[in-house]
Image (cartoon, rainbow, N blue to C red; front, side, top):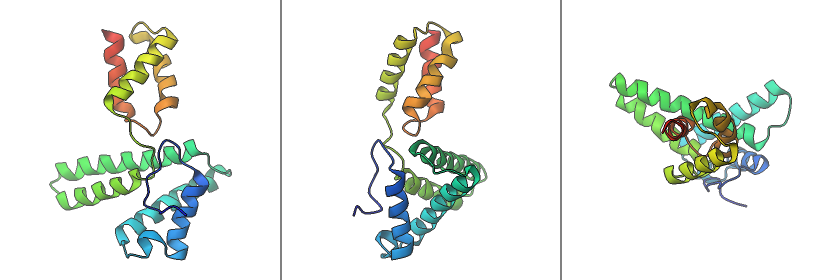
Length: 165
């Protein structure tokens, strides 16, 4: 059985992810066995968010749904880091940064800026986008290809730049 702290590459297997997390919490495997309380607390938050969404939607979540949940959790923490930094609370900012690192281990590997630009060029060519008026068309397809694998805000800025010039 894979360790809970291994990285999941381009695809999140929801069953495997749940099994790994529940294994940690119920059977004392991985970080639970070694007393990594920060990681255990974050795993509990992730499991709770996934289960809450399953109950709310009354269906089993797909890989994309789990990626969306994890991406949202990372985004919330990045916003918190920014706010804590502005308020001079580096201790809380450091804690949030540590949580981000743990959550990101369960997301697909992030693409580099060059890889994102390459995917954007591909989509622009495929859609025949020529200017800023086509941004929605490009972003619609881009979201499906890059969800959870790149910062969509940064990708949007690259698309805007490529379509403007």
